[in-house]
Image (cartoon, rainbow, N blue to C red; front, side):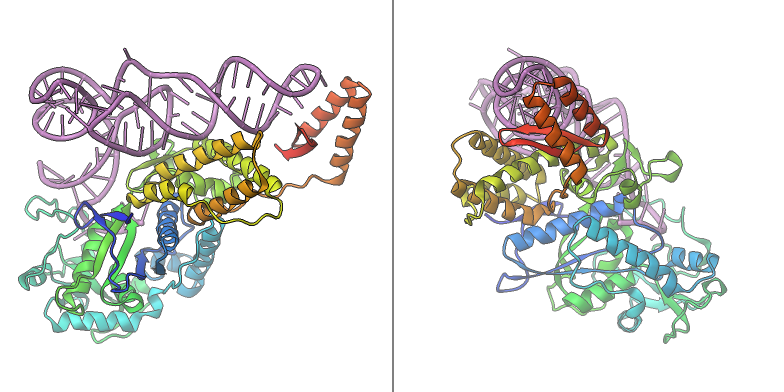
Length: 470
RNA sequence: GGCGGAGUAGCCAAGUGGUAAGGCACGGCUCUGCAAAAGCUGUAUUCGUCGGUUCGAUUCCGACCUCCGCCUCCA
């Protein structure tokens, strides 16, 4: 069964066939963060989605090269650098570090390459020079260089591959900032922005004078440097479809660096946005959360990851605190089953059960249908629990665990946090056992309440009691 | 106005031209000194509304209603 992907280019489900003739290597680029602040959970939905795609491709046996840019120069960053009287590198470094910490908290694999825009100014300038040489970019009176959509279309290229653009009907210009009036046409976009006083020290020399890259160009320059002029997969949030990705295509294909008939990117996948408590996230509504905010509320990275992974990436997802609590319960169910399986399996080593993996990957093959895959996982949990109630062999438990390892390579939930009770509580637990034997249930229940007050619940199992974190 | 997406149980969420996965929550049962925990188990005559095609539609077609996103800051 082959993986099928809903390609934004065609809006259709297409079989995934890598450009690599050997069908082995896959280039994956995902638009990364603009490091001007801590990333919010909406951002992380996209990055968890990218991580899922990467892990699933690896599960399928592909050799993935995963690239994610760090946009570390941009209007908002420059503004904040000025406000904070700091340097660009110091300011962006702080949020970049936090971003990678957050990715780790969410158990996202670190991309193989995470190029910074500021370290690819040479590549960016080279690309702009190619565009100027081909006549699809021009230097305006303000010293900036713009991409000409009209010239680009004049070369027979299509602008509007990802979105159906109707230039006559577009309400163009409503939000165009006033400093861009030098453009020949409102739809044109900046490749190189001429230095202005507000930029402070943030400027690089270029053939067009000092300045800095425009918004879209860094992704074109860095993705093509890392993965070649034509690569397999490009991911990002749905808001990037237009203009960011449309402009990336225009810049990349307009430079004439692909072989005839080749495209910049073969498959585009876009993740839908998040709602929080049913509303669009906004600071004024109080439903704007960074990952750190949620950790502060006592939720864990794996709970957040799980919740994000229960929804189909292409559909808007309502992220709620109630959902996080449900995630905690669902994870508890999986953890419980795994713990019992481990106990049963002991040291038995076994191979995964291919019959189990088949429906799991069949679901994911359908454009990353995680819901179907979770259905398989929970059916598996129930079946294991039934067997654990009698009739399961250590070998069968070993097979089940090996199967889980495979599935979990895709979902990457990590393992349940170890919760070893402190000795004084274990002593209380023993005391309770003693008084229960003596039928002093009053004292036994008092101990139970005391432990509960300290955050531990007693689980009386066939093998005796154990303490569990509340 | 243009373009795109969505409406399935209390909540989240799959799916299919042949009679509705899964998770959370809730009820029942097992276990227990009682509990808890855990496990098992039950729960949508019905898939936004109205028509049409069909032996049969939640699934296809048409109309309508509602919600959401994008249209040059945005994951």
